[in-house]
Amino acid sequence: MLDPDVKPSQAREFVHKGKGCLAVVVAAAVLIFGGLFVWNKTSDFLTSFGQVPDYPGPGKTAITVTIPDGASLDEIGGVLARADVIKSAKAWDAAVRTESRATSVQPGRYLMRTQMRAVDALRLLINPGDSRVRLQFTIPEGLRLTDQVDTLVKETKIKKSAFESALKKPGDLGLPGYAKNRPEGFLFPDTYELTSNATATSVMKQMVSQYKLQAQQIGFEAGAKKTKVTPYEALIVASIIEREVNKDEYRAKVARVLYNRLDAGMPLGLDSTVIYAENLKTNTTTPKDRASTSKYNTYNRTGLPPGPISAPGKAALDAAANPANGKWLYFTTVDFDTGETKFATTDAEFEKIRLEFVSWCTSHPGRCDS
Image (cartoon, helix red, strand yellow):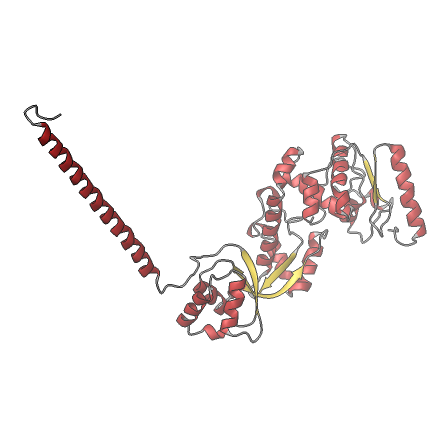
């Protein structure tokens, strides 16, 4: 409010002066903040000038990289950049200049990670340790633990006694809690990279880790809970599925047959569990085989066998955790060559498909004999 003694002409002068001062303040602020902005941008440019684009590390996704025989350091940098192990060739060149042993990198396959610092990638190649891949090996689905060990011995050239000793310390294998230190069924069948420093324990630990990864991806434990069984029981079911059928289209239906029979209190009546119990090398069993007193004999015992009978693959695990909907109580593979499997709900339907299987066996002598 103006002083009442101030004349109107003087008031207008005060207003004009006030506006002028405000304009000066605003202009000054613009200059100051604009200068700061320019300074910050210039500083950022000057700070980054001369730096090379590099990842901060330590790395993300596991990846296997092949360094070709006779590759130059520049070519190696290109291989790593294309695989996204390093961010740029400039970062690789800078790393090479800091390492006098850079020329000692050997050709071969290496376990690395994407988005590593270039210098860390170089140091890994110089001192690979257990990151150097000696060879690849494959463990097929459906093998029992003893057969898995025999295959591992053959493929890795690690002594059988080393695997047997490692199995006596199951706590070192990283098994899930519900395994309760029982490794049968948990060595996941897959293709693996064998590193130079691999041991029996590290190889089996890698296989258990792959089992846990695959089980997590399909929601195995949640599926088991939904199906009202424990994860270990679901693994047993998966191990049976793996041995009973070899086509994915049948797996979830077989799972449903098994759960339906369990719910009805019926014996599972499976050749596969007797074959496991008696360590047979056939597809079928005889009356003598089926008279076994083993707890794995599902002809004369109800419920699931006490443990897995094989190492199931991902499809069998998925089927056990996510069974199909249906009322089937029986299934029979009617053709061992094609794997064709048929399902039945009643005794009469089962007898029909059983006779179809008998007919196939009759026309293929020696294929169904124990």
